[in-house]
Image 1 (tube, rainbow, N blue to C red):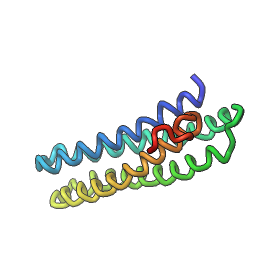
Image 2 (cartoon, rainbow, N blue to C red):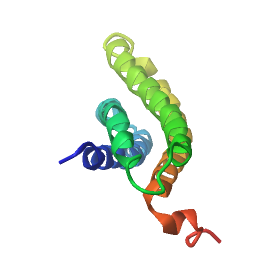
Image 3 (spheres, rainbow, N blue to C red):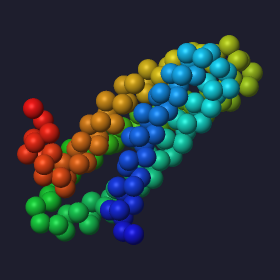
Length: 151
């Protein structure tokens, strides 16, 4: 398996994982379950780890992709830029989740606040996730570039 294949595997995990973590967070808040709300923090941490894996395979994947005809830095750059913002957002979410797990050992009254904050951040990050995936897809999927799916 080469770095492009690894990058493709790892890049899908944070995008899908964030959506699932967001939904899990929402259900945990609606059900008012402390256990589910705490478990939500672990989901966000896991998504952050997935994002790091995607980030660390990106440079090697880029080197391989630049050897393909028609693939240039101009095509890859938009994906790199938006993916960096997405990574930073996921890292903030993961760090807040770690912080929340430690703080909540002594201050359980902050559980709902942390979950609401993370829910809002995750909602905003979902837009970045879609854009990151779309710009990544445009690198090799000419049907996206030509706008066949856009109306």
